Amino acid sequence: MNDLETEEKVDVLVIGAGPSGTVAAAILHKNGFNVKIVEKQKFPRFVIGESLLPRSMYNFDKAGFIDTIEKAGFQKKYGAKFADKYEVCDFDFSSQFSDGWTWTWQVKRDRFDHILAEEVIKRGIALDYESEVTAVRFNEDGSSVTQVKKENHTSNIHARYIVDSSGYGRVLPRLLDLNEPSKLPERSSFFCHVKPKEVTSDKERMRIIIIVYTCDIWGWVIPFADGTSSIGIVGSPDGVHRYKGTKEEQMRKWIAEIPALQERFTDCEMVFEPRTITGYSSEVKKLYGNGYVLTGNALGFVDPIFSSGVTLATESGALAAELVTDQLDGKAVDWEKDYSEYIISGVDVFKTFVNAWYSGDLQKIFFSESPNEKIKQQICSVLAGYVWDNKNPFVKKHDRALSNLAKIVSS
Image (tube, rainbow, N blue to C red; front, side, top):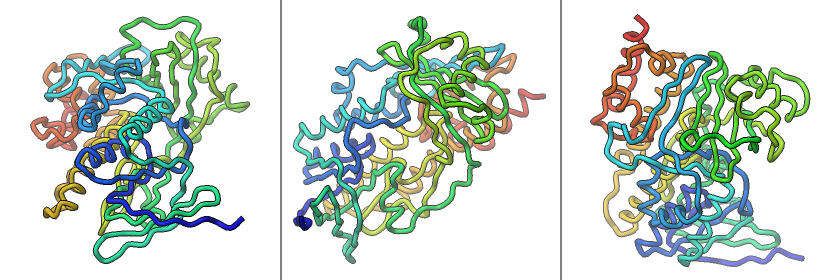
C-alpha cells in the first residue's frame, strides 16, 4: 500500500511528550495558540529521572498540572539524604535559603509522563503517539514544514514555530547538526526497580538517598509510593561494570557490597532486569534558531547526581512557551539574553556542583565536623533546583564559593 500524505497547519509544533513538551504545550494552549505534539514512542514508556526537585513545581503550576499530579498519589519528597559508610548529611527543603516550593514528588516516569500527556489531550491539544519526525524545512520567516511519519501515513505539518522537547532523541540537533560532545567525562548508570521485603520508615521514604561509596562510585535510592524503590549505581563504565554475570547477578553483587543497599535490599524482588545507560551527558552548539527552540534533554543533559533533568526540562519548556508566545504576538524577543543565557546560567551552576561532587569537594563540605547552618541552607536551595536565585552566593559565584568553602573545611 502506498503511503498516505496529508497537510496540517498549526501555530506551534512540539516535538516530544515528556514533561518539557507537555509543560510548553499547556502554556502555549492556555495562551490561545493551536498546538500539536508529536511523540515517537507509545506511552506509557520507561524513562529515568524519577526524583523531582521543588523548583520544577513552579513550572508544573504554570502549566496547571499540580492538581492532576496530586490526585495520582505519588510519593512526596521533602529533602535529600547523603550517606557514606560512617556519616549522614540530611537536607530538608523546608530549611532552604530561597523562597519557593519546599517539596515535590518521586515518580515512576512511565506513569507520570503518561498522566501529563493525557491531561493535555483532555484540554484539547492534539497529541500523536508513534509519530517520527523524519525531516524539517525552515523558511526565511521562521515558519517550517515538518515531515512526520506514522505507519503508512506521512503528515507535512506547517508551523509558525517549533519547540523541540524530544529528549534523548534530540531531533533538531540531529537534523540540523547541532549536537556537540559533552565536556564531562563519560559515565555509566546501572539501575532497576526493586521491591524490598520490608518497607522503610515514613521519613526515609520522603527523601532521595545518595550513597557515597568510593571516589569513583555512588548510588541512589528513590522510594516510590507503592513500596518499591529505584536503585542505581553511577560511575566510570569500568567501575560500574566491574562484575561478571547476568545483569541481575551484577546488581545483587552491588547490593551485597554496599552496606546501605545490603541493609535495605538483600533478597529483594527485582521488578525488571537492571538496565544501563552510558555516555548520557550531552551539549548542543546553540539552544535556539530562526523558528525553533530546544528544551529539556534536547538542549543537553548534565548528570543524574542532583536530579536536575526534569527541573531543567520544565524550566526551559515553560520559558520557551512564554517567549514563543511573545514572538508570535509580534513582540521583540531577545532569545540570546532571555533564553539561552538564562538557561545556561542554571546549567552552569549544576555543572559546578557535579564537578565538585566527582572531585570529592562536596563530600568534604557535607560531612564537615562544624557545618555552618546558613551555608547549608544556601546549598540546600541549589539541591532543590533554585539555580537561578542570584541572591544565593552558591548561585551567583558558584565556582568560587564552592572551591573556597572546600578549602576552608579541608584546612
